[in-house]
Every structure is written in structure tokens, then in C-alpha cells.
Amino acid sequence: MVHRRGNLDRRELLSATAGAAVLAATPRLLKARKRSKVIVIGAGLSGLGAALALEEAGLDVQVIEGRDRIGGRVLSHRNVPGNPESGGTSFAPGYARLVSAANDHGVELIDLTPIVPFFFQRELFLGGERIAPDAWVSHPRNPFPEPLKKLMPWAYLGTAAAKNPLTTNEAWLDPANSALDIPVSEWLKSIGWSDDAIHMAYDINPNWGDSARTVSALMVLSALKFQQTQQELAKGKAMGYTARDGNQAIPEAMARALERPVELRRNVVAIRSDRNGVEVRCADGTRYQAEHVVCSIPTAVLRNVAIEPALPAEQARAVRELGVQAISLVHAVPRRKFWEDDALSPNFVSDGLINMAVAERKGADPKEVTSLSLWLRGENARKLDRLDDAEATAAVVREFEKLRPAAKGQLEVLAYHSWMRDPFSLGDWAVWEPGQVSAFARIVGKAHGRMHFCGEHTAISNRGMEGALESSERVALEILDDA
Ligand SMILES: Cc1cc2nc3c(=O)[nH]c(=O)nc-3n(C[C@H](O)[C@H](O)[C@H](O)COP(=O)(O)OP(=O)(O)OC[C@H]3O[C@@H](n4cnc5c(N)ncnc54)[C@H](O)[C@@H]3O)c2cc1C
Image (cartoon, rainbow, N blue to C red; front, side, top):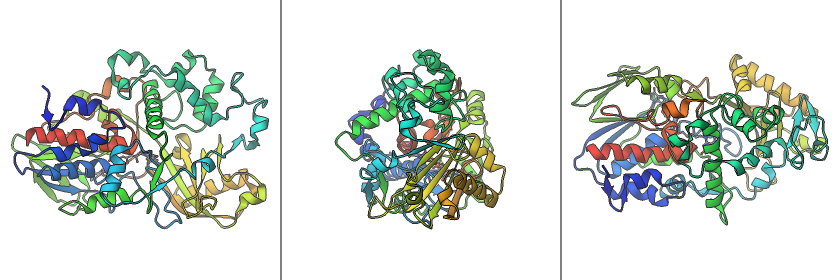
């Protein structure tokens, strides 16, 4: 059945891709028939997007949130100069929904175009040794074939994009492509990559999974396709954005626009639904009754929430087993510009404990470094999770000083965030492991009676923050169908 609302139908909505500014406006075209009450669990982007859409359609909405802050996996450190991010970091002009949310709610965006060239000035450290770009071409550890030897490891994965068999943002879900639900390492080998090239281009700084062996090719190829769509949509526009007071300002402004304030510190432990309604129970004993519930809880947390009646077996398995990205960030302020002493860029990528160091330039002058963000991914993040915070940050500083002796005594650590240890995330973005796209992607976000699921892990056409907002539109439409 096709549900037509205003000028759009559901199929059009779900097949629309990243550029669909019209999608962001869609909820305004809708009106519910009655003022149903909806509980939204989670004040991240997807929960807030759903709440605003439902409220605008005339429903009575209450958002409840487990943490004592708004934003979920969008987390800006206001105690560090420049408000660096430990979560959603930057976004492109093709993030139509997120840009609209910022504009609609009065959040000023910073154009990152002047900063981008600095971002790609990176040093490479392998086995503790710095390898300069001109030495890299003939370095014995360079595994890339001629004529691509001049590419630095972080630029090499992009060459696979030219052979990407996925032609649309949604093609990763097409059963016709399910043969690609294999480790991305296998797909890379099938297009001629050596094991060493895969290790160098993927494993030393993995964006998805712990290594190319642990993630589905469908996930990586769909992410590459999404990036390509974003690049096309950004042509002639800004190269990226971040919000003036940190990206967390966007969900915070969305929360302020709600009729009812978000109730914080409501850690949901159980959701029960029957023909008449839903009941949501929190660890502190608070209970909420409503006609529908929107649940934006990430799967790694949701698997510990009691759901009654139980989810269908395959959906329950999806919630239980869907992979998550291990990632931690350390934010430090340099006491001195040590990179002027060693005459290197402050940014680097390494195959050691610190996967990536990024000099943030969030002040008035892009030449000025406001702080350093140190990224720990996959196995490195898990290794740090076995230490307490003081030991973990000390280990990171030691590693930094080993690679950059000029930085000795110059780093003041102001923030550290492990997403795996954060009880309201227990990991970062969903990682579709080999076989999981075919098994889980179409069912993980399926409505279950009066329970409706959103969140970046349920997105179809978009990823990250834009995916979270895409999912909020889908879930709002689901409820409005019933309301
Ligand atoms: C390091 C990092 C870098 C990133 N970089 C980018 C980027 O550059 N671009 C991009 O687009 N995306 C990026 N992302 C991803 C993006 O931030 C997320 O995909 C997006 O914010 C997820 O939104 P969500 O609403 O789906 O989930 P969340 O933001 O996690 O929202 C879920 C909410 O539910 C709450 N909750 C959880 N459990 C309970 C419970 N039991 N009871 C009550 N409440 C609960 C949580 O506290 C949270 O507020 C990044 C993320 C991280 C961590």
C-alpha cells in the first residue's frame, strides 16, 4: 500500500537520498487525526527529530533521556578551547536534514572550507618511525602497486571507490547485492589488492570495524557511495560544517523547541506493549504510559532492556549481535607549539596506539591550533578500555611523546571519552559484520506492535547524523499512519 501525504509517498521518501531538502520539510505536510500520546526514548538526533516531527503533526510527545545531557553520540567538550567533538564531528552541505535543523533552530554553522587543507597535512608513523611523503614512494613498507605508490595510506582506500559496484545509496540493501555481504578484505582482494595493501590502507586506522576482515563489504561500499554522493552535493558549496558552539548545540536547540522539556536521567530498563498502549519503565521506578513508543536506544544498550512481548527471533538476534565500532577520543591542549620545534605537521596517522592525531582549528584564525584530538580505534580503543581513565590518558600521552619527542611535557589532557564504556552507547556507530546486512538490515528497525525503532543503525540512504535524522522521519510516518 502506498501512503500519500501531501506531495510525497512513502516509497519516494525512503528512496530519496542525501540531497532531499524536501524530506526535511515533509513532517510539516502531515497532520495526525487525533492527539495521541507518544513517549520518545533518547534525546539524540534521531529521537529529537522524531519528537519534533510528531509534535508538529499535532501529537502529544514526551522525550525521556537516560543521560544527564542532550545529544547522545553528539558530544562537544565545552571545557576545551574550540569545543572539540568526541562524537558527530563534521557534516557536509548534502546533510539536508541536519543543516535544516541547525537553520530552523537558530544554530550558527562554521564553514570548514579554510580548515580542510590543514586537515590533510599529515605525518605518517610506522613502527614508531616517521616516513616523509617523498621517502614513502620508495619505502620498503610501501605495499601499493605502481603507479599508486605515491598515495599515502589514508588516500588509498578512495581508489576502491572507482570499482564500487553499488550505484545508489540504497543498493547495499538490495538482495541482488547480497553476494557482497563478505569481509571487505575479500572484496578488496577480488579487485587485486594484496594483503599488505589492505593492512596499510584499511587496518592501521579502521573507520569501520577492527580490521577489513571484520566488516561487511556492503557496509564499506555503501559508506563510500554515501561519501561520493555527499561530495557531488557539495560541489561549489562549503567543504563541511560544524556548529559554532559545538555540534551538540544542534540537538540542544532541537530539544528547546519541544513543547515539553526533555526529562533527563530516565534510564529505561523495560518496555511493554499491548493492544491498548505501551508502558516504559525506568531504573528509578518512574513509569510512562502512552499509545506509542519511539525507541532510539542503540542496539548494544537495547539488548539489555526487557521488551514484552519479546521481539521476533530474527529481530532479537539483530539487536543482540549487530556489531558496534570501538572508538575513544582524547582531547589535549598543547602548552607550546611543539610542531614548530620538530618542523612537522601536528597531525599524524600511525600504526601504533594512536591511530590519528588531528589539530583542531576552531578559533577565529584557521592557522591557530585550538586543541589536539587523538583518535583510538578498534583494538586500540579496546586496549585502553582495560585501563582506568588516568592510566589510559597517560598511555596515550606517552605514545604521543615517543612519536613526537618535541611534545614532551607539552600536552595537557582535558577530556577523554570511551564510547565502549559509555553505558548509554556501549560502542559507537553500527558495524555491519560479514553476513549481517543480509540477515539484519531490513528487520532491525521494524515496528513491533506499538514500539517503533529509530537511530542511525536503522537508516537506509544516509549515514551518521544525517542517517539518524532520516530514521526519525521514517518512524514519525509509521506512527502517523496509526494516529
Ligand atoms: C567519534 C564519533 C565521530 C563521529 N563522526 C561523525 C561525523 O563526522 N559525521 C556524522 O554524520 N556522524 C558522525 N558520528 C555518528 C553520529 O554522531 C551518530 O550516528 C548519531 O549522532 C547517532 O544518533 P542517534 O540518535 O541514532 O543515536 P544517539 O545519539 O546515541 O541517541 C540515542 C539516545 O538514547 C539515549 N539512551 C540510550 N540508552 C538509553 C536508556 N536505556 N534509557 C534512556 N535513554 C537511553 C542515549 O543517551 C542517547 O541520547 C560520529 C560518532 C562518533 C561517536
